[in-house]
Image 1: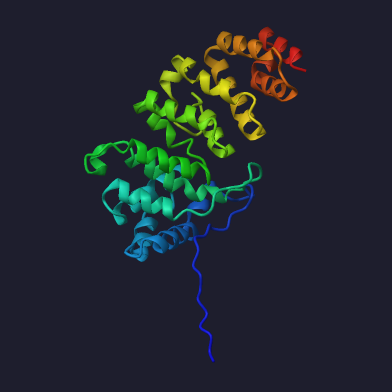
Image 2: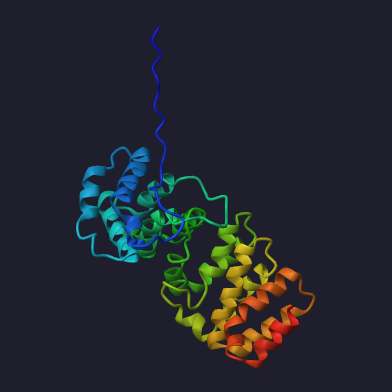
Length: 287
């Protein structure tokens, strides 16, 4: 008797090193293999998806683009080959995801595979005209919740903070209690006023106080992964509002654990290197 073997098809990630190698560009992470994986993963959950046509479209004009430009370019190609209604398209993207990350350190560079996904949300998830006239905010927030558990939604969340600051901050404040450290980190990292590589948030550069409740909620987070983000966020604030940042650090010194003291030393390391007295004092008291 012949036993028919069934091949189980699962979503996959492209091969990628843990760190940048000599002669390698970050843009190489979103090349032919990544595009093939993207087509494969979507086809698993959306049989009508024309993977070959998508791949042909995705490769047009790809070569000279930087990695961030490639993310946006591939989001545009996805837009052309997924259902026109944003809610339907983003539902397919979320269904196609690989399992969430379980580690917070040494994630490697393979996670950049999801840059087109967050670019898709950032580009098409704000405007009701892409969603049959219906407000796409809640749909987009759910998608970013899932994406940040695989990569990071720190790039895509920023247009939402600019367009809908109160609504978005309210969601992020709720997520500060989430069991997933990747979600909690997003609450701090995504709201940084001067996040590297990402668009700045002018309102928070001018006045960072609306975000302070999030930092308060995360300052004693059990994961260093999250606390490091809080420290870097404070460092951003210190560039524009040093008095506010140093006063907050002084207040956090009271009853500080050794973990919080590390956070405070890390937060003011750059002004301390420049000899700023308030920063030097905080580092001394936080030993």
